[in-house]
Length: 218
Length: 218
Image (cartoon, rainbow over all chains, first blue to last red; front, side, top):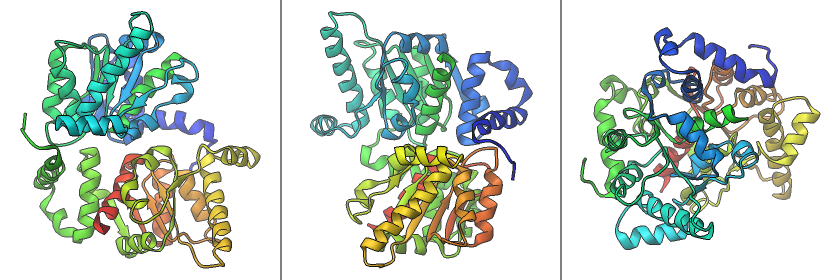
C-alpha cells in the first residue's frame, strides 16, 4: 500500500495516469484540453478517452466564457448534477446547475407530447432560460447542456436549432442505441462542444469534463 | 437514426451489447451474474467489465438477502447514491440508502482523526447501524457498503474487521493510487462482495451493480 496523504492522492493519480498515456496524444491536445482528457481518464481508468474526446469550435474558451457570463447549465441526469463541483460552480460563480429529468413538469410534458423525458427536458430548459432572460430585461443568458446519458437530448437540441442555438454542449451520452448518430449531429452543427466520440461517455464523464474546466478557473 | 420507442431502448441496447460480448464470458457467469456484468457495460460501453467483475462468496444471493432483510446501504459518493434506483430500493423495500461523505459530522470526524472523509464515513456508518440496532432491540440489521470511489473506504473496512464484518461490499473504486491494493484486501477477506478488479470502477458502475440486482427483485 502506498503511504500517501489524502491531499496528495489526486496529484499522484494524475502522475501515474499521465505516465501510462500515449505520448503522441499528450502532444495532440492543448494544455487546457489535456487537463480535461486526463480527468476523464481519472474518472474511468479508461484510456480510450485519450482518443475519444473532441474539442469543437474553441470549446474550452467558450465554456469558460459561458460560466463567467452566468450561464444556465442543465444536465440530463441527477447523477451528473451530483458530480459537478458546486464548491466552484455555485460558490465562486453563483451558478446553480439544474437537472429537469425527474421534475413533475417534465414528466407531464413528456407524457403529453409522447416523448422521452430527456427530450422534454430540453424544451423546458429553453423555456426556463427564456423566462429568466425576459425577467433580466432581455439581457442574454447563455445556456449550456451537459448530456451524459440521453442521446434523445442531443437529437432534440439538433431538432430545435432553427429556433435555438445552445451556447455550449457537452455531448457524452453512453450506450448502443443512437448514441453515435446523436453525437454526429452535434459534430455537424459545429456548435462549441466537448464530445466523447463513439459509444462511451456517461454521467460521471460529463461531470468530470465540467469539473476539469472549473478547476482551471479557480 | 434507429426509430425506436423510448421504452424499447434499453432492451435493444442490451441486445447489441450482448452481441458484442466475448462468447466465452457469456458462458462464464451465472444468469444473474451476467445481468450485473451486462449492466456495467451498459453504463460504461466498456467491455473490459466482462473480464473484471468478480462475484465473491455467493454474492448475488447474499446481496438480495441483505435487501430483503432491510439492510442499511451506505455509498461513498453522492453520485452513486444519486444513481441507485430508489423506485425499487425505497419504494419496494423501504430502504433509504445513505451517503455520509459530505455530512458535517463526517467532516468534523475526519479532521479530528486526521483521516479521509471516506474513512470517517465507514466508522460513522457502523455507529449509525449499531444505534439503529440498539433501538431495534438488538435485532440484527445488515450493513452494505457500496464503494465506487474511495479505496480508503475499503482499507478502513478491512482495518475494522476484528470488530465489524460488513454483510456485503461493492468494491468498485476507480483510480491509480491504492485502488488495486484495496480491492485485494477485500478479496482476501472473502466477505460476500462484488468486486471490479483492477483500476476500473466508479460511482456509476457501483450504482449499476446495485440496480442490476434490484431489477432482479421486482
